[in-house]
Length: 314
Image (cartoon, rainbow, N blue to C red; front, side):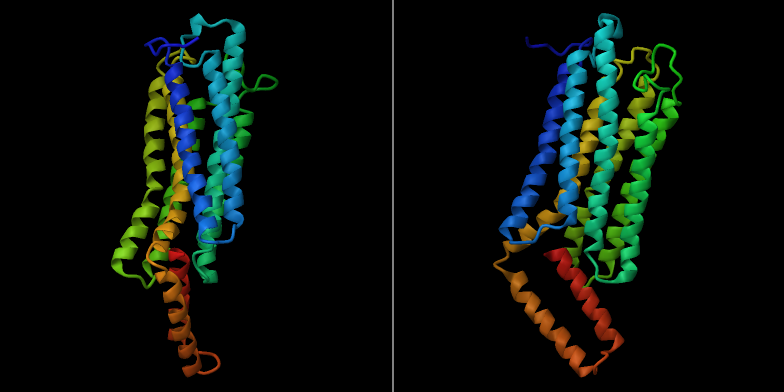
């Protein structure tokens, strides 16, 4: 039976946008894989990690959908005990899967960033991205799983002792934002020293900047979450934070896939990349031969920058 969106029933709205945002992320993921296949690019570790993120996103969307079916977005007083319990359990699972999905997506980006540069000194920045993301995810998962005292860890009602949910969600949101800002900053840093035309740099800067959309959505979500605490109706007040969670998850996956689409756009330039690369390799080899067996420092630096730019454009 179809339900209408009303002031006392926001569930259908959450249901619609949950699956809309999921399919947006799935679309970018599929285009990413199709692009790699079309360009005969090898599948790498970051591709396997983003597949895990998509699976987690699907599970999380199913959990939110189950919460809506049981009463998320409706007044608490209109639900029976079984519906309240089912809603709280579904929300509990959805939050856990959300944190796992966001953390996994960050790890995929960390591996991708590591492959941008052959310089081992640059690898430590990608390692810091991976480590900070992993620490945030592990702490977030453990604290989410045990947010309330056992055995009813999913139930903030009925006198259960729980962590300060306002402080906990602040930690989750701030950690999510800071790690994403760090990701963008590292990508900008690696790109700054690359020998590319300014127009190409601007395009790549713009592509990497899309990640800041996750930060903006997280700020909005944190603000809405604070506002929702003014209401004691935990099922009705949760509809907008839940909807923004879906937006954040979709943006996180989409922006992790967008940089890979640049390769597809470049491939449309009549094979210029394949023509340009042998030329660069020849110049690098000539420079090495002229510089002796060890090669000069300037030749090595130029070779590294060429390899970085090649990774960015492929």
